[in-house]
Length: 160
Image (cartoon, rainbow, N blue to C red; front, side, top):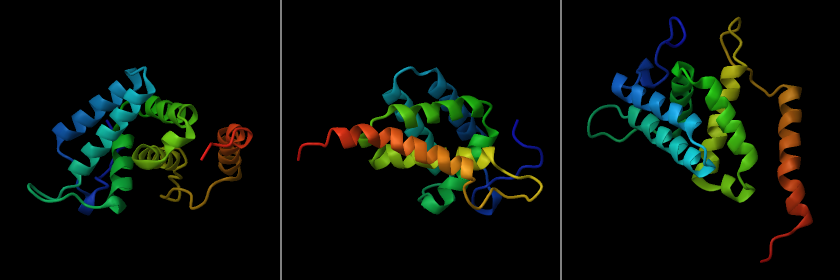
């Protein structure tokens, strides 16, 4: 599947090997089927490792850096037959996980996935680009999410 006329978003338009893309899509299907949030996070991180593997320029070479990750992840999400379910899973994890769990590696990648899915959802084909800034609706939604996530913490400061 995937978008008509799409080319790889990786370096020089390269896409990962078909076997790797299949494994990524399989893990995305397992992501939605998983019930436990920690299992969902583990699968999300496995997909991230697979995307980085696909960024390797050749055998026995290190993958490209973080700057190449977001376009490659976005491409894999676009080609995924489970993009709608993935969107739900990412939003579910953003709401469910404790704020402390949104720090570190899992939080970084979960936020990256959220951003990639936002850009996909708000892509403007007539201008051939994603929006440069957040809409007022998106900004208000993020503000409400932040308030929900921090309200409880203000009432119960952590012991130090």
